[in-house]
Image (cartoon, rainbow, N blue to C red):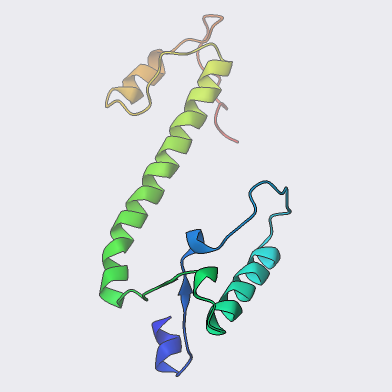
Length: 128
């Protein structure tokens, strides 16, 4: 955004929650439809209709950079949760339900795990 402003482009940021959407209507969800809705809201706001949406200030680059760490951490935590759930799901299909892949003893415990039939974990589990 700051690059656009430096080039002389007028930039506005619409607060997404301020754009009215009919929640009762089942509508197709697509970027094209959403872009049309946002464009109509922007044009109405530029015509002077203040209640059609709200604009938010453009954050400074330093503020955006400060938020980057929080966003990266949230993304990594989300990935970890997904992988943990995936490991748990694979093990449950083998009849193993008491394994926590987040514990420090996970590698030692993994070697000791037995399937519901009493055998070791098959060598290609999790290769997909």
